[in-house]
Length: 269
View 1 (cartoon, rainbow, N blue to C red):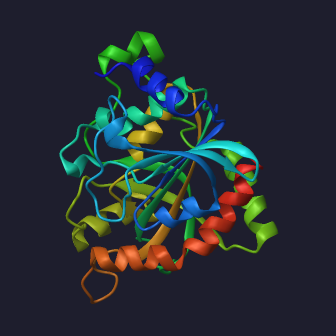
View 2: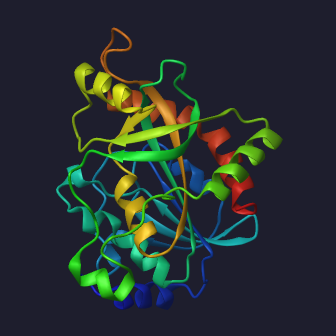
């Protein structure tokens, strides 16, 4: 595994801002970086230990600056296991952000609705997740340095952050659903049978990201809030195909309310 101190040291050499909050932007949500007063933008390829983002709709840059006056680090785009990376590589930036002093993490993603009461364009608070990847980002090299091998996931998404997010959304007039997120490996979309299975397991939305970062955050003692942008109805709910273009377009249409919510949350959690 890469050297966390070397990665953090390189970032500090570019920008000495000490971030208090980190935000990971999902598919089609890169425009949310517009709410930030950016002091530095560092391509992932320049940061030791980081891997390149190859997915469409992910800029692949670490932005440092302030949102509503709060020092923040924003990952404009993330990596996925389906790009050929390990879960540890995908989650590595979380450990680096923790070494930079970040204690609060907001994860966003694009997701397909399993809950038939949801609609494309809705935002959903992640109350909990189900990991169907079959892998974990926790690796032996980090067990003694960062946390226990057997990380507690009973509060992977901080209850106090969820409560605060619901209050902020109400204040801002933003409809905010809440539910369980299931991660499939991808990159293919789920089959109708897999969606039916997810519903039986208690899922409200499905996607291909977020869980590795949430596990790593729990492992290294960060508090996490997760928000899904519902970009499509999952397979089998509607009699129509699902495309990545649809996911990106719906994400762009939902950016304004996501931006409004994240800006409010930056000073509230």
